[in-house]
Image 1: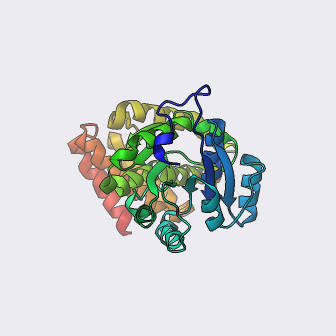
Image 2 (image 1 turned 180 degrees about the horizontal axis):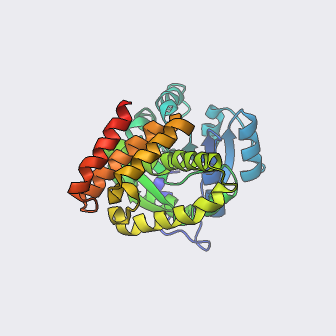
Image 3 (image 1 turned 90 degrees about the vertical axis):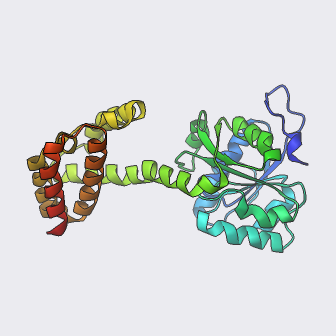
Amino acid sequence: MNAQSIPQHPSPQDRPARLTVGVVGAGRVGPSLAAALRLAGHRPVAASGVSDASVRRAAELLPGVPLVPPTEVLARAELVLVTVPDDALPGLIAGLAETGAVRPGQLIVHTSGRHGTAVLDPARRAGALPLALHPAMTFTGTQVDVERLAGCSFGVTAPDELRLAAEALVIEMGGEPEWIAESARPLYHAALAMGSNHLVTLVAQAMDLLRTAGVAAPDRMLGPLLGAALDNVLRSGDAALTGPVARGDAGTVAAHIAELRTHAPQAVAGYLAMARTTADRALAHGLLKPELAEDLLGVLADGGNE
């Protein structure tokens, strides 16, 4: 079975060349993608995973699919989703290739944001067809992930001859392919980490501070505010900046820092770093007046040195 057996524009009425699918690493991502491929008519046949959480995810998202060792997953599947942590991927691929588990014509797909297809070179040398398909989505490991894939962008890197196959797989999972050059993968992944992972940290920290301030339902308070802020920045970029830093309210920022030092000293470094970056961007885009920036930057510098 090779990549050309996948139709470019799959539909429920035109599925003569469905693939058997395996998952190496039954974390939050792999079973969800395999479940999405099952909806497109492909057939998940095996997954690997040993933790209790992996067993639960497989049972929920891939009922009836056996959990077997990674080499057995490759033996059973024409399309293999390798969904392990970024740092574990090179060693795993090299090990699978060394054992002879990789077959010529087999599609080997990893979902790492950091890596392109070069990490799959050991499998490619064994005759496999390498694809890097990274869903730009946060996963829970539940059925809701399959629904969230509708319209989700995938960072795709693939050899030219496999571009149509990569597009077809992403579209079958409900996603939208976005082509990322091999050399740009680490920068692409850094951008997503800043936008999503760091957002979780910022929001969780804000909720902690609101609880300390006596707010009984910080999630309810932040929900509308953060939803509006996200919508505004996606529409307008830096023009969406508001608040004391963008206004140059040095006194307010100084008060913030003092309160954080008293009640949440672990939050000071993050506040200062984000405030300095916000001030730089506000200045560059003409939102922060230069005559107000000097006092503000002085407060931020002093806050970092106390």
